[in-house]
Length: 220
Length: 235
Image (tube, rainbow over all chains, first blue to last red; front, side, top):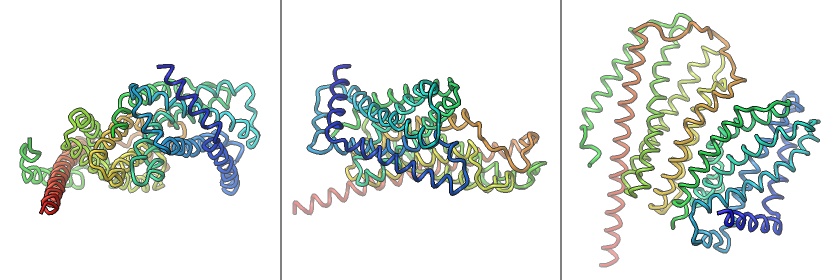
């Protein structure tokens, strides 16, 4: 099992290192979102400096959605996904492997986004950075676990690019609520144990659901 | 077993109309007006009456979707889909009656109240579930993917419901007449609420059965068309 996950992870990371298309597009999209966020906040007389956490999760939600969709689309080219489906492995393990690869990419992007958010919002992350990590990583894991399933579901429809966010985003609302709460508390120097516990339960449920149902998504 | 064989559709319809009429009379005439909110509180009986069958509908989607994946019998897919559609309609009614109640009570149409927010998210989840089916041509794939999405969506309902309450730190308090004394205490109010719950549950059953029958008729029609096309090709 760890072998398969490592293989898939290294494959996806290598492909991303070569093409950089998912990472670059998601990261640049986040940067644009931050600019829009500034003008939207200041023109409505909301204190922009008080919204770093909101901006962080909006970037994760939108860039993550774009990234997940693009990663899956890239896999469909040259029938790569069909080859994966034919692999003599438990489909549940394939789900865990795809989840690990997607979660790693989004976590790296979010960690690179943090210094930018600290810069734009005059935020002193300093000692609070470590307190942010559990909420951020668990939140991203939950977001990606559901996304890894819904991206396959929507890819089989005629309007996959439109349908994916419509299906995916409402399902991840509990994760976003808990994640936002965790990182907000962390920015104030506290740890939201309730949020972390909820995120752990949500991740357990999402990963179990994915592990059990992924086989049905791969059928031809 | 045929869907319509358990209880004739007409008996269910008559029962639904009778219970709905009684609930209307009890809620609008017999039950007293709320001391603080006045007559606007009466919408509550129908607002709450709609959310209960909404939840039942979504949990039935979960059950029928699991049954579909186990048996691969299309009837379970049709039952799940009919339940999802009816659940979506009930959620829509909750979202319409909620703001009508909120405006005179809280002073705003929408207040990001946990109850309204969780219903909106559930509505969006099942809108995606119902919408998705229109964009998959292959019938077996449509059934299979709908079942998986139905399981994921319905499993999320409790989390959506509770997550909006766990972190309700910024929950806006009622702007107008938000006193703790408002609530159901009068026995006639309890009867009106129970009647509304019964009426909407019967309405859910009626609509679900109708939806399932329609879907079954549709499936039979498609099968006949396919056979006819095959015969024409042979000829």
